[in-house]
Structures are given as structure tokens and as C-alpha cells.
Image (cartoon, rainbow, N blue to C red):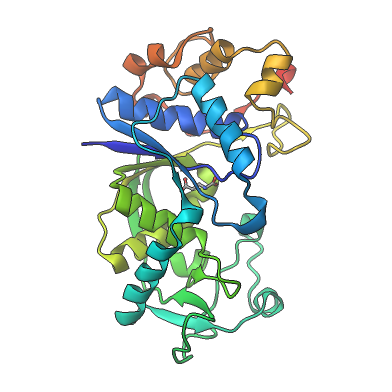
Length: 299
Ligand code: GLU
């Protein structure tokens, strides 16, 4: 049984990029009669807020993206994540890291990588185990990872040059995104991960963590980014409008769905529709890989 998911972080309003990801994953599941779920990725401390998550759920509901499973909040899964860390530790996959943020900045700089993604060079790899009051990293095995991306085609990455050994547990007691996302996809039985292309660079690392945990590998689809009318990254200033702000500008959910459906190759022209009407036309080989600009009058 195919199971897709949308896993937003409840740190703000879902913008057109997020909504496009949600719609694509929902359509892909529905097109093969599969199931779909929503998961709130709220492990990232105080930036995550319940009320923002609830507003995101309302927006997904307004678009008709219905979930088949109970909603999962990652902040309630601490016991499970800790048990998984214990398992990884027993199998020798973890080491404690004493590097401060300042150390990390000084250790590695990789100007070719966007968004300040710096590979961790493994400085603390030789550290002995000191328990769960330290930051913990996964010791990556050497070598590249390949996967067949549903949008991008065949992919080949060496996680050592992208993330290096990923942080799984922070010294402040927070579980890291890589740990939570891989454990939950595994526990929930997710077979297809659809997300924004900005996360392509961490996929090889997450595949390594799946392997360390003996989890099956889901299919991956990394969508082209939705950018502002001038090609800039969607942000608070330009193009990051959500369902409510678009409605206030006279752009209703049917119009948003029509535009998103067209952008995913389901419609020849953007024309108002319902999500369910797009299902029959959805196919991954029709989804273009490139960037997508928000219409000028939508910002
Ligand atoms: N929670 C992540 C985000 O909102 C997405 C994680 C994923 O889809 O793997 O950026």
C-alpha cells in the first residue's frame, strides 16, 4: 500500500511552495488509490507553535487535502526518539560532539553550498561515549548514495561533502530534524517522500540513517522551488502569502488549486478547480523539475 505524507514545520503560514508540495504528495497518493497523512514537525524548539500548526491544518483542509491517519506531533515522540538513539548507540553508530556553534563556523566553510549548509568534518569522531547530556552525531559510512528521484531522475551524492556526520541530538535536549523525520517515516510506514528541492541536499544523509536503522527506503520526489515573480526566494516580503492572504486579494482556493494543478502538469491552463478533479491527470513524468514563479498579481 502506497503511503504519502506532508510534513510541515509549524513555524509560519503555508505559502504556495508548501501548498504545492502538499498537493503533489496528496495527488500522488490518491492517483494510485494510496493513503496520505499529515505530520507536524515541531521538534525545532520555540520557533514551532501549536497555533501555527492548527492554522496550517485549516489551510490544507480548505484545499480539500484530507488525511487518512491521525495527526502526529513530533514534540510528543521524545520517548521513541530517545529509544532509537539508544539502539543506534548500542550498534556503535553515534559519537558525542563537543563542538560549539563557533567551532563549527571556524571548522568548515563551503561557499559553494547554499543556505550555510556546511559539512561537519568529523572533529569529535574519536570521542568516547559520555551519555545523553551531550550532542550526538551519526558516524556516516564512506561513499556516495544514489537514488532515483521521481522528479529529478537519477541522483548521486556523497553525504560527507554535503552534511558530514549529522547531528541527531542537541545538547539542549532537542531531537534533530534528521532523526525525527527518518524515524517517523519509518514508524508510519511512509513509502513516498515528496518535498521541496531545498531538501534534496540532505537526502543522502537521511538514507544513511535509514540504513543504520534497517528501515526500508521510501521513494523520493524533490519539487522545483516556487519563487517570487522576480525569481527571488519566497519570503515574508515577497510571495509568501498563504490561503487567507490570497483570499483577501480575491484569489480563492479553487483558483489556487487550478494554478498549482497546472504547475504540476495536471491542467493545460490554470483554471479554477477542486483538488479531487486533478487526481486523474496526475503523473510524475508530467511534473516539471524547474523553478516556478508566483504570478505577479498574487504577491
Ligand atoms: N519539516 C520539513 C520542512 O517543513 C520537511 C521535512 C520533509 O518533508 O522531509 O521543511
